[in-house]
Image 1 (cartoon, rainbow, N blue to C red):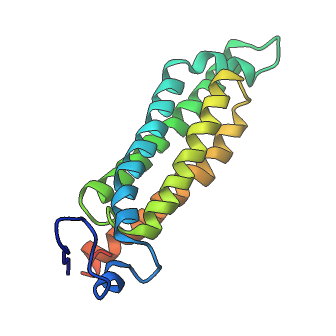
Image 2 (image 1 turned 120 degrees about the horizontal axis):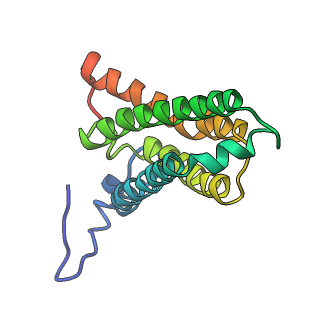
Length: 166
């Protein structure tokens, strides 16, 4: 329940406790998590697309100096598979976000923001420093799989078990 006192945007002290969720996040914090989460997910998505476009240099950094065409093709295919699975996980997470399942869930929002922000920074170093390809799998596991699995649990809870989105 929202009660505006006077012409200011201050809420009534009696109703202030109703504005907090069970974990102590103020509504203004939750409302600012939504656009921040969207921007961080978008930044991670842009980095993944950038790696798709410039993966040749990263694939070469995974190989010895005298590599064969077969080695290059193998590493390129591995990176394409990793990037493709990452895009599928983005689809799961964006579906849950845009459908409203997790849009206002503060726990999922903070987890998603932390993971995708870490991924954006890590993948920018991956591109510019030309890290080896095995590093992408670590970033993938911690920064793409974890938030997507949590999102999938929320989607199953809401659509499968008919729970209310939090």
